[in-house]
Length: 315
Image (cartoon, rainbow, N blue to C red):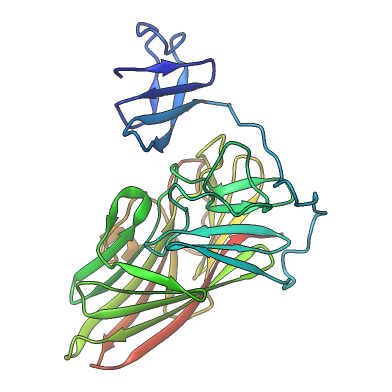
């Protein structure tokens, strides 16, 4: 760690990754003190928070404090696009999407008056009733991959890699990558869940084999990256966050398989994805990601495949 700036709770420097103090470096406090990386800053430095630290939170100036809501009931949704970022807000959650189509806005302020965490310009997935940030921007890998013939495109805006660039328009993200598959992603809110409606179209001019789509989310709150996972169904992986909130990544589509493990899992052909945990499996507490893989089979030229999945909070 070089060129550090420290306070009792915050640290910046030039080295990414979690830090455990040896007790011998000035500014890192006593031996065993853990500093959790919060991501890279605009000036290129890396920000850390001391383990256990959480910033003060507040609602937007014009937003009243909401009562707890039933996450299973649809509610009206606000939608705002700023540049190539999309923000959605209902009575249960706030969601922010980046230019790569994933959760987590990049250096873009939450719209004025919307619920937010004080001191944070960006948002990933925020539950309003207790301001739980399940997808805490710059500490999360929320990514997707589209594969064909063993090759693939990978979009992870917050981890610095997007091979299928796209744009947001009227709540829909459209992109195109190297596989010849056009990607269309429409997002909407249903209570505490984000509904993703995906359409993949083969524009390669030839048949594509073993087409796959994978979504991975590494849930991290603002205070801890540790979760307790379980496979609730063939296409459903649930996690209990450090504060007790329960999240889910799920689909009823028979082509979907849920699994848990890994972080920036780029390839939808990774061997681990073909050996998912059994339904009912409950893992130990750890910092890792939830995966949902759609095996779509062969895809004739010009054909479109469609499917849906949900990501968010359970009641």
